[in-house]
Image (cartoon, rainbow, N blue to C red):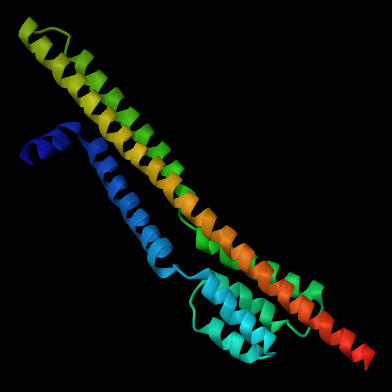
Length: 216
């Protein structure tokens, strides 16, 4: 532990900046993992069956109540369709598009920043590397051979430590981005499928009702 602290102290402000940066990024990743794997984890088939069952029974109020009980982007978008169930297909789909435009970006928020944070970490590491090299070569001026060798080795160590730390943080952020982005894209695809199924059911039921009214 003391060795790590000594390395951080030798690295100076850049090492501590990267450390602070990594803690901030880790907090963001943990929060997103919680959202995707815990808070927003839903059984899409169960929701689809529950909502479609209420639509088939013409009980839209209960379907809306069911959606209100779920704090999830999917149910919020489905609710937008249910609230417009007595309107035209165009208005229903328009309402779904508006709700999706509001919910989906909020659902995806945060993940897109990770590659940018990785780039910033790399740039800060590069600054630390340059600082170490400056320290190494500035120590070569004057003095005896032992001191010059010591200054050179210390400066190169500082440069490599900064590079290693920054690239480690950047690689972790890129890996986290790939995992989180893949997960949320799959969830969005499932949500789109469920919403399409619900909207098609509402439109089909409305068409049947209109056809029966004309027939009578």
